[in-house]
Amino acid sequence: MDNSAFGSAPASEPSVARLIVAIMTTDSTGPDPARPPIEGWPDLLTVALGLSTVEVRELCRFLTGALAARACAGLFREIGRWAGMRGSPPDPLERGLRALGARCDCEALEVLARG
Image 1: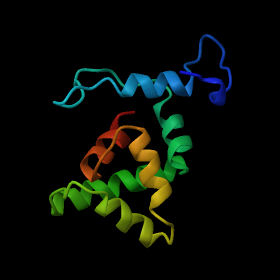
Image 2: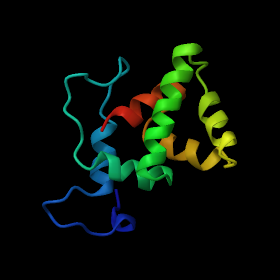
Image 3: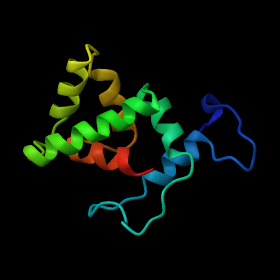
């Protein structure tokens, strides 16, 4: 994989590409709950999703409440609702979440809470 698009990072700092690879190591049963949080995850989320740290927390709270009230439909239904309430198109957010391994609202919440 050519990581030149991500630029070079000092050896002591993980690159975005290495962080993405680290999170995509789950099997069909989901991520290992004993796995420690990924260093730099909040920074990766803000870049991948185009959101501020505050917006990521707001989205996480919104999804937590929405999924407590309604079961996940296997879609990005609640993500679209949150983006619509903010007057933003959902497509860039959905693309970012898919790049991070999410395929629906409940997996998006898992991705957001990983850090």
